[in-house]
Structure formats: structure tokens, C-alpha cells
Length: 251
Image (cartoon, rainbow, N blue to C red; front, side, top):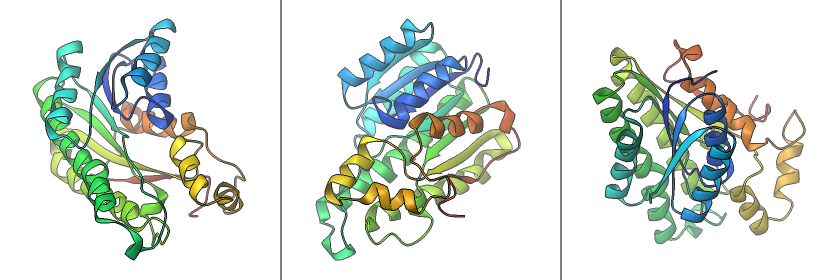
């Protein structure tokens, strides 16, 4: 098992990639603390994991609220006694459009959740890993939209590119403590976020598929598999990387 005996924290775990990751991490032997804003979704995924023989608990968490983020990470230690690995997956999106069409409210919300929330979580996770497991791994969920200019989602792309920078800086800082920090950059994935973007930009999904050599969308579990490997001891010499999981779209 990739994550046998490890305690894992997963944000944005109520649906999509986060829910797939929570299920996968539990199947791979981890005890999982799920965090997200919607309790109903968290409860459903947690019960599903438990019904399958896994170990999981959940905490309601708003990534835009610093106290909520710290409390969520602390809850993993309170519930399971330690923290070994974390997947910072939670994010939000704004309507697509040009840079000058992005509202101040949308920009601030993207910053609070997609960038500041990740920074706050990483800070709390490093402290928890230091105090309990002593070593561990963190994976941040970025986006292929962070790897080049993003005219449709300029503020979203900017926040995700900043997450890449945080990831690389943290890898350098905490590597000597044997705390590895990596990111994944998913491409077109079958999630509610992509569906919301499709509703604003009809035909988007098919256009993205046409740009993908593998010729299809990713299933959320396929993205979770990459995160699980990076969190596992099998990637023990990998840190500071942003791993594209995009079906070849940026090849």
C-alpha cells in the first residue's frame, strides 16, 4: 500500500479530485482527515470510506478563514495523533473572461482561497508534521493553466502559478528536515469546476479534449493517483516539482 499507516489531510475533499483522493488514500492504507466547506458532502464521502473498511473523519473548513484552516489541520493531529502527509486540493474559480473583466471581489476571493489558503495550510501542516511524524510530504493541487498565459482565467492562472512558486520555495526550505513538497498540475478533468466553466463557455470540454493527445478527459481518480504517489515513500527523492497530469496537453 502506498500510504500504509500514514495520516493524511485532504482539503476540498467533499467532491471531485479531493473526494477521489480521500477514497484512494484510505484504500492505500492511510487514515484520512477530510476538510471542505460543505458538511453534507464531507459526511457522505467519509461514510463511504468507512463502509469500505477505511478510516476517515471530517472537519468543516473554509480556506478563506485563517482560523478555520489552522483548526482543520490541528484536527487531524487531535483525531489521529499525528500528521504525515497532506494534499492541498481545495480551490475556487471565477467566471472566465479577460483580465479587465475580472472583478475585485473575484480576484480577492481567488487570492484568499487558491493562494493564501494554500500558504496557511502549508504553514500549519509543516508545524504538525514537525511536531508529530518528524518527516513527511505535502502536495499542492495546481493547474496546467498555471504553466503559460491564461487569457480565459487570468487571475486563477496567476494564483496557481504562485502556488507553484510556494511549492518550490517550500521544497528548498524544508528538504533538510525530510519534508518533501511537490505540486500536480491537472489538465482537463471531469469535475464540477470544469462543468461550471463549460456552462459559461459552451464547447469548452470538447475543445480541451481536441488539444489532448490521449483524446479524453481525466477521471478525478487519475489525478488522485499522481498525488498519492508523490505523497508516498516511493517518490522519496522527488521534491520541488510541478508534475503535469494532463494527458499530454502541454507536451
